[in-house]
Image (cartoon, rainbow, N blue to C red; front, side, top):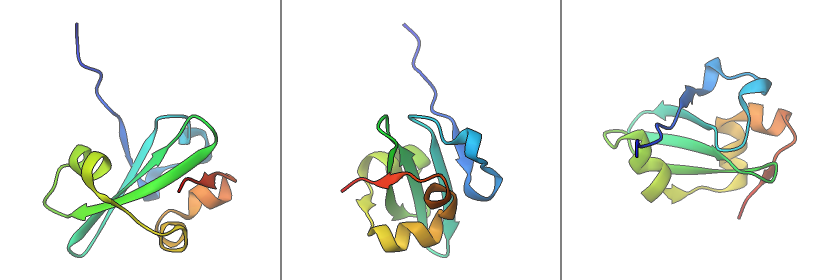
Length: 86
């Protein structure tokens, strides 16, 4: 059985059509990497890890950040009307 490869989209290249369930957006700022995970229920959450981590490691093991910080990093998710997942 083959492993499913997760598709990551750079935050500034994403459009509203990209915000489908299980999509992941990413960006790097200084020493941190951030991954926005889009859920199945029109929701989302952002995880932060060291910039030298892989995107999968950030998404799976990073620390969840606040909604306010997430909205500043990934404004398209706010534009799409997604609810932040706590």
